[in-house]
Image 1: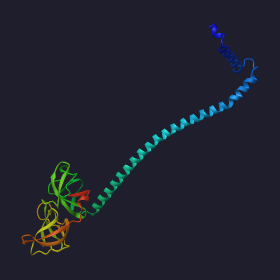
Image 2: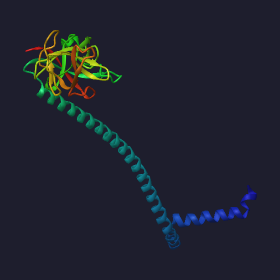
Image 3: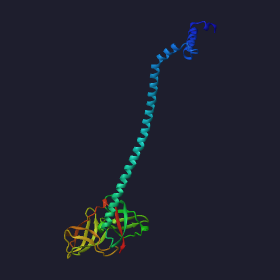
Image 4: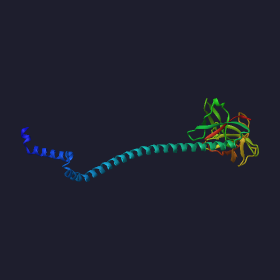
Length: 269
């Protein structure tokens, strides 16, 4: 210890401590001129240090604000996406409601008791054999009931019925047979579905007159099918294969694949 106190390093440290005490503590005020000069020298450095500290704080606040903005932008983006989705759903609902309203205005409600139904599936093979609706036995639906769209156009009739759903056999189904007649001449026959040909007006007597452009309606003969439901228009007429009857191709005015709603005829008024 004695050896260290006698070294130059110890003496320099002791002198530095003494002068530091005199400059900063200034016990009797005699070192004020020297202290003031020393503080003036340090002033620019203090200013730079303060500016850097303020700038650093500003950068921290800026980075924090950027993070906050990012969070808020994500919230706004999610909200915007939600609103876009809701707008699309509302637009679709509006279109469905408009379509349903238009059909209701064109339906023969003064003639039939009708039950609106939504189509929930169709023939996946695209053959137009059947479709399924969201009404069933708990809605008083039963097999054989006619299914129509606007203006009383016949689509098919109910076949299989469950508690909440029903299958509709379309007119284009080969298993479908409905009695029909021409509006213009009263010529009678049946309409049946045929793969690749659509609707065939069959069993027309040779003595009956049927021409292209004739309109076809249900004749009301047999089953639950009422008279007067529109089926389509005759496109062309030709003899049957056995030449015992006449046949004609019928064109329906509806496209099954584009339907969203149908109406079940649950009874006559």
